[in-house]
Image 1 (cartoon, one colour):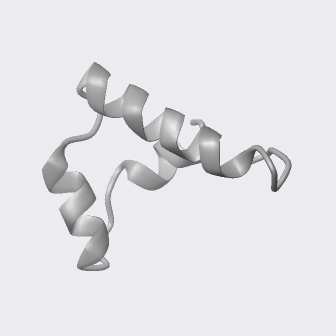
Image 2: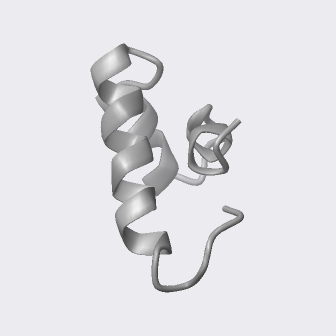
Image 3: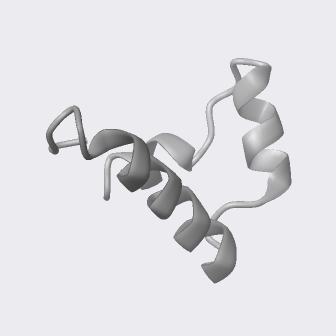
Length: 48
């Protein structure tokens, strides 16, 4: 993610929240993560 370990949890949540609010990812994308299916989420988490 390119940040310190201390900042990582809050930035992780912030990036996911912002992506959901903007419509970039959906609840379905998050559910697919649990099924180990590729999603756009990893790009969001990495800040891309």
